[in-house]
Every structure is written in C-alpha cells, then in structure tokens.
Amino acid sequence: AFCKTSISFRYPAVEILSGIFACFFFSQFGLSVVFFKLTYLALLMLVLSFIDFQKHLIPNRIVFFSFPFAILFSVLEGKPSIIDSILGFLIGGLGLWAVWYIGHLIYKRDGIGGGDIKLAALLGVFIGWKLLLLTVFTSFILISAIGWFGIITRRLSRNSEIPLAPFLTVAIWINVFYGLDIIRWYIAFIT
Picture: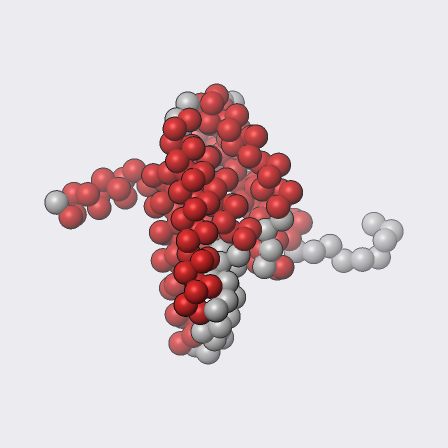
C-alpha cells in the first residue's frame, strides 16, 4: 500500500484463476490425491504461462522443483503408471528436442525453446505419454491456428516467436478432461 508501485495484472489473474481451478477440482474430486495433483498442475501451468507469455522464458528452477511432485502424484494416484510416466518423460523431452533440432537444421534457428522441452518432459511425468502426445499435438494445432491468423491479419510475421506454455496449458485441460473421448472418437473415425 505504501510502495507506490502498480501491481501487475498477472498477480490477481493468477490468484483468481487459481481459486477457480481449486474450487472446480474440489467440487469434482473432493479432498483427494487427484484434487491436489490437478490443483498443483493448474497453478504450475498458470504461472509458467504468464511468465512465458511475458518473457518468452520457462524458468528451470520452477520446472525442476516440480519433478518430485509429479513423481509423487503419479505414485500416490497410480495414474499414470510409473512406466507411462517414464515414457512420458522420455517422449516429452526427446520428442520436443527433436522438434528443436529439426527446426535448427532447417531454419538455422531454434524452432522451440529449451524450457519447452523440459516442460514437456515434466508434463509427461504428470499425465503419461498418451495424454502428453495428444496435448502436444493439440497445442501445436492451437498455436498454428493463432500463428496463421496473426500472419493473415499482419499482427505476426513468419519469424514471430509465440510462447508455447499458454497453448500447452489450454491443451492439457482439454485433454485431461476429454482426451480419452478424443482418442476413442479418432480411433472410431479411422477404422
């Protein structure tokens, strides 16, 4: 009150959204491991999304600090299984590293940031490899749509950097709640 500096929009936005997520998860899952896991994941992704949006950076210390929690939640809940979490870690980390490497070879610049690679590995531990693949795919669709819209409206250029964490955040919630339905629909569609 006495520092005479304005408060960033980010702080009340994170606090309000965190409260909404926590209330929603509590109404759905009660005071359970799932509640704590999803609330932690929501808070993590909100914070990282705002930081990535403003600074184009995903801080290592936040991601690394969250790995033990991701492992603990997977062990306590049993979902995903330890094997699925390990595969999620490997697919998330190596898969996005491959995107970075290919972008670097073809375009001579980073196609994706190092923080995004580590975040994908972390999300793989939280949600397992199947939902991770769907989440990354969904986020790439969303980011492509926004990118093309930005190019068409001349608000972005082909070289504009778009932060990935906000799109991963939207995609993760679509897929945590509807991912299995999307997978079933897709399998039925192609068979």
